[in-house]
Length: 193
Image 1 (cartoon, helix red, strand yellow):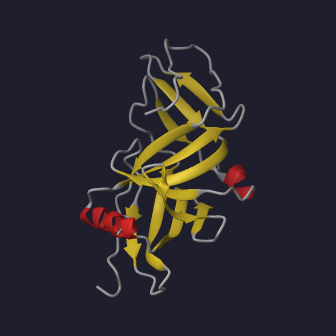
Image 2 (tube, rainbow, N blue to C red):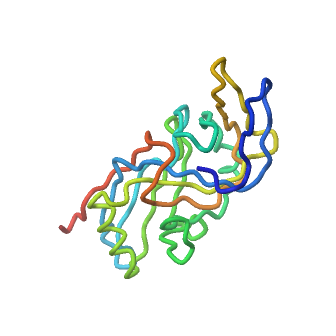
């Protein structure tokens, strides 16, 4: 699912770059890990992959997509201020890289998060939804670096976009809908429970 108005209107015979418009991808978060940290200022911890590399997305409006290994390396090297939100809604910021409550790491599987969710009243609802599996997917808002992607068309006219370089990373989120079913985050109940 793309949030901008860019669509592949007809199959191209050559690789075509995409503009640097902000995009959002939604991913499946099976295996989400939720754990109470024992600290008073934290409600629980979420760990897992919100983006996967080398896996094919669902149809995103006329094309499918893969994120190449290493696509997050350059943007993470800039130490971006990224928020963990609920459904990309900045009224519900659960953790943030700037204050050290959200850690991001690119590894061989994709983009790994380790978030210490704040002890907010709405976070209790979020935790319940995660533990029940009502919310089981992840997403991320990003831009592609100039020249950081390519489109290819196979013999059957199927369009595949490959992202080689993420230019900007703005948020990672938990949500109820996903584009990449292969992501995995683990849900572990509170140690006190």
